[in-house]
Image (cartoon, helix red, strand yellow):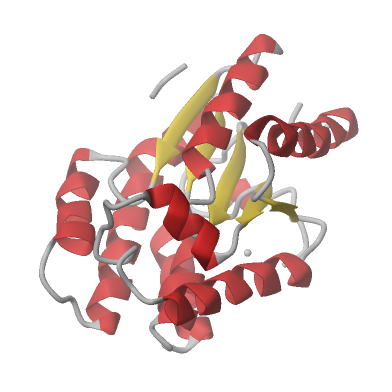
Length: 225
């Protein structure tokens, strides 16, 4: 293993190069367990004979690593600049990592994607959600996941899981993280055919079973075949 609209079967073909692989995003607040669930899902998909790419945002490329340093560990960044930097990372990530993998028939599992911008900058930073979404759609040439899993966790649980180490966004107060949480759940409720919202306060294995059941349903339908 290498380390949002009604479902549209042609969406991977948006932009240059039709994609034949499949795309799953894991979203949710800080401390929700996205990286743990991505690793478990990747192992399971590989056991089914799939070729899997695990990736993440921000920082899934060398360029993205530099952007990540500014976004998460630098000094104050204004809300609009923050949204632009996340979109820049995402656009480069899609063009250089995700689309090429999809074109090879790989199942791409990403820890965060454009819904994180819609939630964190659109709700947490109080920017217009439609502007933030449009920016990411432009940057990615309209590439949307086949399935987005929202791992729902309360701000206090997320904070407890993170312990004493917090990056610039994790350090925001609970009302910021509560607004982010509400936006993620609103996005999932808007498109239930393309989203799965799960209670991420439960044991990791129980959460993974919920995710696998949904992915199995997609496999049975041929959506990820």
